[in-house]
Image (cartoon, rainbow, N blue to C red):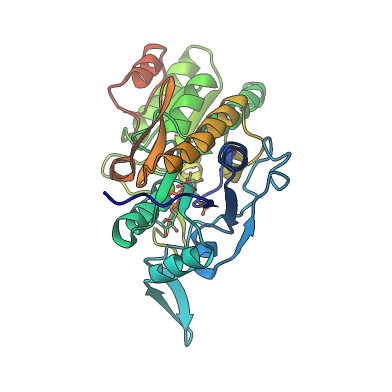
Length: 367
Ligand SMILES: Nc1ncnc2c1ncn2[C@@H]1O[C@H](COP(=O)(O)OP(=O)(O)O)[C@@H](O)[C@H]1O
Ligand SMILES: O=P(O)(O)OC[C@H]1O[C@](O)(COP(=O)(O)O)[C@@H](O)[C@@H]1O
Ligand SMILES: [Mg+2]
């Protein structure tokens, strides 16, 4: 049996959309690696872009001091660069090239024995491909405010986004009630409705529209009329950016030309608010929470989860469990193959407990 190479130096990068808790993971990785195993740690800048262009810096204990409560990522990130499908401008023409060999060259130049990738489905798909096709020793850490990764009970960043959305709903409630208006809050989540349903329940919404349950706008009107008939002259509607009507199209805000997955959702909130105002005659306003959901200091829950994931990722490296991702199987931190982690999107179960509870208390899903 071949002896495993002794690990002395590890690399770390953050990929995909940022989220609160990334710095807490980086800090935990560095602390665990340095204090327990005397490893050195190098951080690649701006996700896979830094690995392709060999932009990196040493991450010492000093470098990560004080970053636990800080939002964002000290390493920078991007939700564009993919080494297997890398966007370049050649003679003014955009072309995509496989530059994955450059990643391996830079890993060798830096004398890195293992790489920790902190990312969502996209970044972890790339990590898996680098591991399977190039033999790169990789372990993954699941991040995203969307909470759409299967194989883990929760991603870090979601709890903070949920709290931000809930606080927004609390604030919208007071102004909605005063002005007798319908307030529509559009939240993120891509094709999953986790932020919408959980914030909607926590923030006392009357209608929640999620991608998993196609809605009919007439059913939304019905709910608003029902409330009006009971003397409630305001309503709160939460709309996930990926919500759509049965047979309808997603509302796309923009396409990012040089991205592997170019669609950016957004705009459904405006549409729903306009339709409600036109049909019911009730003044309606829309708030698009946008990137506020990705910013700010992580909640205590996310700080703890991120710290556990960071420490767990280093333990996976030391155990030689490459091609795996740390995951939460409440109450334990365990690991799963990356293939399993990115194989299936985690969606809100339409017959699950959350949806049932919401329906029991009279929340409408517009169906
Ligand atoms: N299904 C996929 N397979 C391979 N690469 C992907 C896939 N989806 C996205 N990517 C790449 O991964 C990068 C990060 O993906 P994105 O979804 O933006 O972030 P996250 O890592 O949070 O999921 C994107 O730049 C894109 O190049
Ligand atoms: O920052 P951008 O490019 O507008 O992307 C917005 C998307 O990123 C997210 O905020 C987070 O998604 P990822 O974790 O997959 O990056 C989505 O909720 C949203 O649809
Ligand atoms: Mg993603």
